[in-house]
Image (tube, rainbow over all chains, first blue to last red):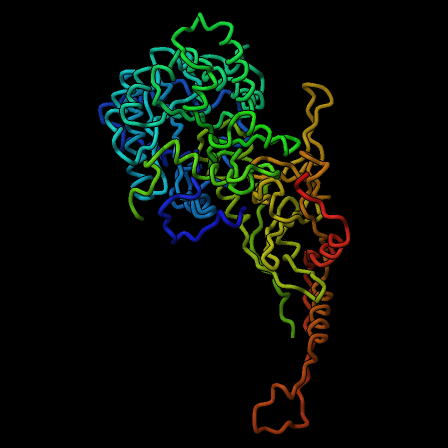
Amino acid sequence: MTATLRRPQSEQPVKPTLIDGDIHTTFASEKELLKYLPKAWHRHHEMLGRWSFTGTNYPKESPNAARVDSWPPGGGSPGSSLPFLREQLLDEWGIDIAVNNPLFHSAVQRHPGYTAALARAINEWQIGEWTDPEPRVRASICVPQEEGDLAAAEIDRLGEDPNYVQVLLVIRGSEPLGRRRYWPIYEAAVRHNLPVSIHFGGQGGNPLTGTGWPSYYIEDHTGMAQSFQSQLTSLVFEGVFERFPTLRMCLIEGGFGWLPSLLWRMDAAYKRLHEEVPHLKRLPSQYVRDQVWLTTQPMEEPAKPEQFGQLLRHGNLADRLIFATDYPHWDFDAPGQALPKTRLPDGFEESLFYQNALDLYGPRLLPVKKV
Amino acid sequence: MAESIPGAAPEQAHNPANEQAIADPSGYGDPTIGAALARKLAESRVDTRVQQVGVDGRYVVGSVDDIPPGAHKIIDVDGREIGVFNVNGEYFAVLNRCPHQGGPLCSGRQTGFLVAPTPGDYQLTRPGEVIRCPWHGWEFDLRTGQSWCEPARVRVRRYDVSVESGEALTIQAESAAEAASAPDADAFAPPGLVKEPYKAETFRVAVEQRYVVVDVGAQRARSDAAPRLATEG
């Protein structure tokens, strides 16, 4: 499998065959950020800066939660150097398309105007510093997540630009994502036929788990899957998928082993309690089946590898999983190395490594320009 | 005849004792952390393609001064990257490829095993004898190559390391060369000239320095005989 994934850099593919659903780039410096932040916000940024998020509640496994070998030799943070990203990720593995998910915390700022300005700066910076010089990188529309109208305005501003392939949210906002305050985001995304992807992380002020704050990073890292389950439950029962039947969503870095039992539980509950949610017309699992994709990293690693195949069947996941590396973060999955060593369904690798991503993102993932 | 020991390049090896600045993982976004890590990685990049000494898969890594206690060096042996570590005067060598997902194991952090007999009582045991992969933090025992994440089925390949005198290595290299093809003065004769009976006196040149030697051949032979340790169950 590994051999077929590598390809000389010079061959420009007509259709991508290795798509990375989750990479992270970051500003090389404060100066680079200010280059893209409207001048009107410089004083606010310098005096108050980014509130509410200094990176983590817990010391991570390694600085910046990054692979120890991902610090660019020329200085700067992991993910801040395009030449090093090419060397260590795109060229190393022959990746045709990489979806950039900047985690610069525009989504969780408290000041509505500043959060919108910061999101806008991040979006412009992705084009100027990443997708323009490197067409293999594709951008996400970052939005002021808690301000539905401002978020929708930013989506409308950029929605027809083919460099952007999705709207990016974080999984831990201020409220469950099915609630109506967030609907303008979904409405705008549907208007431009853009998927909405929700990434691991964020800080809306709520504890990570439904039972409160844990003690260790290992609990944070493990427990984030709970947040994904809570949000998917909210999106289903609040009726987001029913209200926006063409909405496509992707859950990034939240795992997928939990999906089968959650769907079983939601379906069973719906059969008994459907009077409470009469706005739903179908089984919860049917909405998820038609409208939700998930990324693999961090790959589920059953102690008995053959259980991975069972998991794919139980969750109907073979045509819904998108491969992701999470570069440059420490829990990076290497293409060709990450899959459990077991017999996989016929055609699964093609689905995982590109076809499912093409199904989710559509023509936005096809090459838009040559190097 | 042998003026220098093949493969013994005098590169500066990485010394973790100089890297205290990176010890605190909570300093998110602190550029000094990145600078220190980038420096460390630049130092530990593969910089030496070593050559075989003798005929039995033994390679000179460098002089003992190149790898002081606490330091390590990554070398290229016939296209295989091997990290050679000096832990308090003992030398260990393992393949620079993590058996989990193929990460560059030897550029990870060198540490010990942190144990807690009871919650709140933390003890760092065997400091320096454990290497942690820079990707997922998998730990391997430098003495044995054993993984303690999944000890039942994963280990990284280890190699024997020894320290030998330059003189011994010179003799080995010469006898290997002689075994391969005996030197013959006639082979170097300029065309048309006749060999005169006079011959200048030659001397054996020995190098007194002590060298670190990694033994690939012996390990290779052993692992071929032993059941193969797989990374898959």
